[in-house]
Image (cartoon, rainbow, N blue to C red; front, side, top):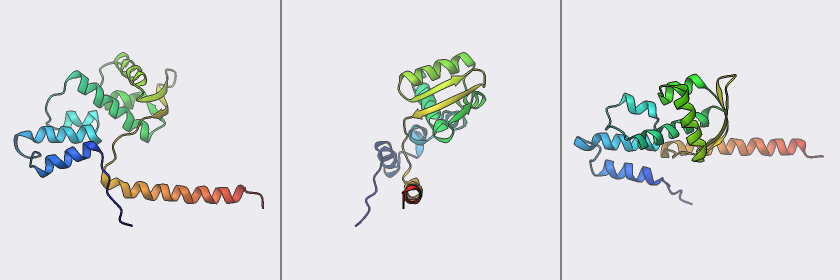
Length: 156
């Protein structure tokens, strides 16, 4: 059976921009910005020469950055959050996290004593098509390990 490539809506816009040459010339910054919102982080916006962001766009991109961090770490040191989100104060960080919790972006606890964010869960982000093979391999391996564990705990 032929495997069909599935892509997200953002990825379709990115491909459309590339196909029509919008990724070159005067609209290049907007094409790059689309990539950042699909797969990037707030920290990337400040490194690249991209169009300026509105406050709403900055907040959204910071939420996406929180998701990226939460996908990779269950416990995130406050220092990493301050650095990657590039907020000016701890109060601003706390307000951003409260907003993310209210927006159902993340479920977490902020541990003031240990200066860390403890992640319970978070929403997902778009996945680049190139990563689908890796994800499939990881899920296949997880399934194999689950079957092995199941067989080991079953009474004989």
